[in-house]
Amino acid sequence: MTTVEVTVPTSPGEAAELFGDGVAVTVVGGGTIVVPLVTHGQLHPVHALMLHASGLDELVDGDTLTVGATVTLARLAEIAPEPLATAARIPDLEIRGQGTVGGNLHTGGDLQPALIALGACVRSVGAGGERIEPVEDFLAGSEPRLVLAVELERPLAGVYLEQRRTHSRTYAVLSVAVARRDDGVHVAVGGFAERAHAVACPSVERALAGGATARDAAAAVLEDVVPEDDPLASAWYRRRVLPVLVARALEQLEESR
Amino acid sequence: MKLVVNGKERLVAAGPLTPLLHVLREELGLVGAKAGCQHGSCGTCTVLIDGEPRRSCLTPVGAIEGASITTAEALGDPANLSVVQAAFDEHYAAQCGFCTPGMLLAATALIERKGGALERDEVVEALGGHYCRCTGYVKIVDAVVAASRGETGTRAPSTLEIRAAGS
Image 1: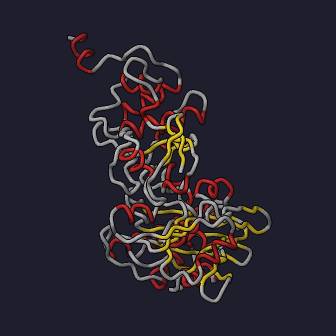
Image 2: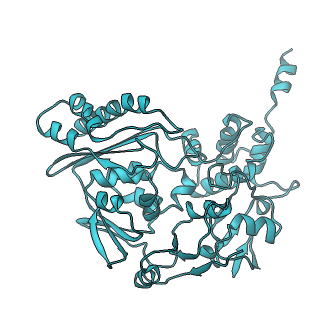
Image 3: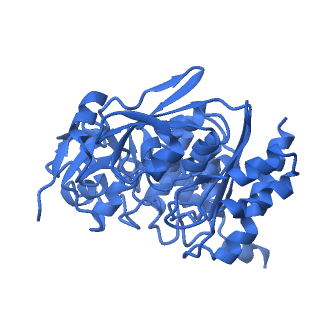
């Protein structure tokens, strides 16, 4: 049996220092992702960085909403605007109280499309130091990063819809987040492929800006993503359902005016 | 490290990444919390950590140093059931019983949090993370609603008893 080095930083700065370049570091936030992997022998941490005392749980509710990496989904749901609040309420009550924003962001969680639609930015550290970038760029990155916080502006309105997730899976069959911001309507989708993170839908956004109806604009979602087969649903199913879900979300956004 | 388990201070030797569930069952001999799916989906390992329902199978014990843990063992005993336990008994809310410890603790926390008569949809929402493969949930929800109204102490008649009375 190999021994695990466990470190428990007591400040964000110490967490960043102990994370270093993140190679061979297993970050433990709420534990909902890492602990079962360890229990079932699917993960053998070399260095476990436990964040429960790191002070990364700050939540600043001002013009910009700043959400620390270890803020729980339950706390986020209380203060977040739509579409983020609904996304944070998807897990059951106990998981909401334990799962963190940083972990959810990392693992194909329900927050991803909501954060993209809101134009949120992620502040993180890792090789090359601290940086802040749009959530989509963060998700597209491949090197290990420690999330410090997520920052976002409140939108004018937002809607989150998901095609029901089976209880024991970590992601939805399909999820759609739409947000009306000062510069127009933003659309993001998730769950369309097992290993893909959520993405923005520029074709849908362009169609809307050009005056298309919700239904016509939603059809353009298949220019933005390529749905795949996985154990939850077939690509065929996803291609048919995704435009419907996007259209519904856009219609609900329209009604919220 | 130290934990306060059911009101008693306990010293724990397990490593910090050990799930609380394993500490309770294997180190402290408290087998009320059940090892079900062990990835957070089924709910039967639920315990109260500082009064909040949490999955003990997902909680690394190193993250809750000094916390107060409540397990099903602390709720009551056969001669002196807690209100929620009595309601489960009266409403036939347990069949095989495997999910019951998690259900009881989640329901107990819900009733304390809301502090009054609960609606069915509030119970369904709060117990949404708990699987029961026997009852179909109706009787569990009946029991929790009754417990929230303090309606315990009179056992409801069973289906067989109702049929017998009607024949």
